[in-house]
Length: 251
Image (tube, rainbow, N blue to C red; front, top):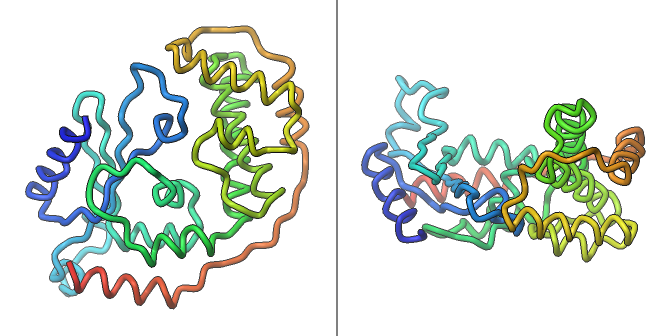
């Protein structure tokens, strides 16, 4: 599969007239809770020809995002400048790309990776993961619209990651099972139960319709009702701007 993804990346480079800096896995495979039929969520960062950036006719809203689907492979990429703007906001999805240990193509820019992993804003991460928990709980679980193991895992991953950030001021491990093991704040009963559900999902039972699990529902509600306050820590733009110039000129 990696060879196929590499081939697709090279095809995209020629078709879109871009250079892909790196392409990584994102989503359930990265989080170590994929099932046998899970898609491949490939995320990449690209640069365009220099003239695209300096031309006075350049429309800044074009060519910033590229999306293609090839069967069970979903490829989605951001232009380096859009990517870096999201990095400045400590967008958790962008940071997870740098955390990804499943690299399909290219190399991650070391300086940008260092900034992402060491100068992130804990508040941005916390509220993003809390929002993820709230969305999955209210739309699927509380409404009983689609109560499945998968939706509980997504809601609880948001909760656990948010609590991990506020407890440690650090980045949650990208592997959800590892994050659970390292989350000393999490009740043992919930931790053990989540590990069992991850196993069920990996066995292909992620979409089984189930009854609401009161143990999780109560814990999620208590978490969502908390009014935690985290001081923001914005990323300094100077180093990112310098690294961007180096990347674009080099490529």
